[in-house]
Length: 177
Image 1 (cartoon, one colour):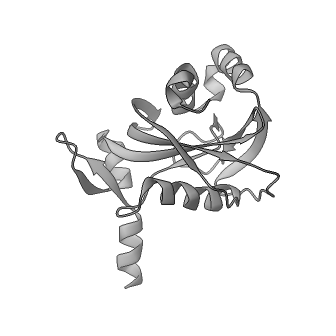
Image 2: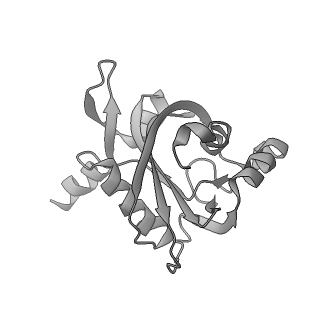
């Protein structure tokens, strides 16, 4: 039974050309560049956004700065539930999330992998919550103003994950304001 549960957890919602969801293994989706569901969470403390530097052991984009938290819902899991789950797994945060919008993008993330995602964007407020970053997921965290991050990513794009650079370029489309 545990093997069945583990297999289901590696399955994420793929999206076929007609818009129907189907289960696909996460790495298979990334190798094929298949369109799939994802979640991106932006945690704020007032006007400042929490960003994370991805752990050195991540299978793609290690050491690059990204938004507060991002992942995929498991097959059969709603985007909102997946977003809250990943906030707890990556940052040790138990925060309410508010849906902000949906964005689709495609980005080469290196090593023959492609993120082709329909991203459900969520906002959360830190409200002084204690954070416990998981070192297997997160190398470092910091708070910054979005406008400063847009400038920084423009000057040093190689320091930022491809999807985060897309988010910063399309900031108005995210529905976070």
